[in-house]
Length: 309
Image 1 (cartoon, rainbow, N blue to C red):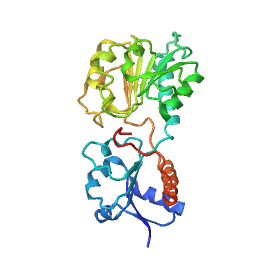
Image 2: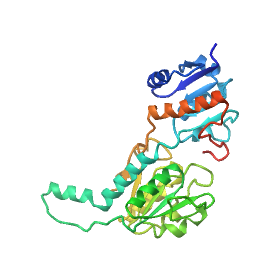
Image 3: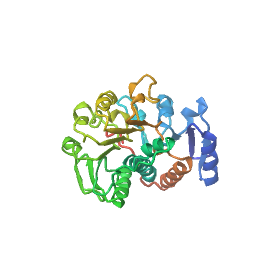
Image 4: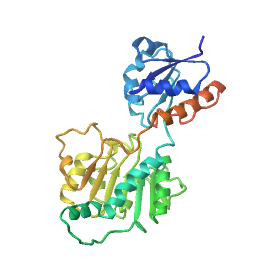
């Protein structure tokens, strides 16, 4: 009899099953997402949004490996907390850096302007900006932010980080707390939020703090949608047309078609694609944790239910 029964709750169960079977994990039976398996399984490999409504029926669950970094649906006050929850970390830094600097460089080098000029067969050199000596403000100093900071250093940028306790972090020129965010907004050329969703971070970028942005600043929201007041941002960017925003995460996804921010020329909207988690990477993390479970070792990337990450 197998020691562990694994429930797959993903949007691509067959792919995950094939990958897991190729790992030849001992003492495990891989179950499908049939209703009867919810109560039988003691391990889940799951997407948080799919797992959350089924948790009340999980009578044997001891550990869940999330397929995503964000586990907001699983850490709400009313959700159960009597099992170990681990998420996916350490794989998103390169992807997020590609996303952020792809858009940032295109903005600073005026790619859109030159494409428009090409269509009109115009030869009009502009006055682009270099990233050298520009100030990047990162809200968050975790693994993703560290990788972005490292990339920023290659471009000669000054990097400030914001975290809970102003803990000095390698790769950042300075680190401060969220309470002191306003003092840095006015001097930041680019701002990127990679914060988790917690009671302290929700609404951190609101009408008051957004109003402190530089007149030509560019804002990235890459972490959680509820850190940013989208309506306040719309009102600001409607009048401050030299400011820009690149938005990948939202409070409501998909972003409702009737939200006016869709129509702003100084906003780029992407459908939560900045740093997807690929099944191969998720399975590697799950496999490493499963071997730790068999040995009685502490699992990697455990989520603190109280903090929410």
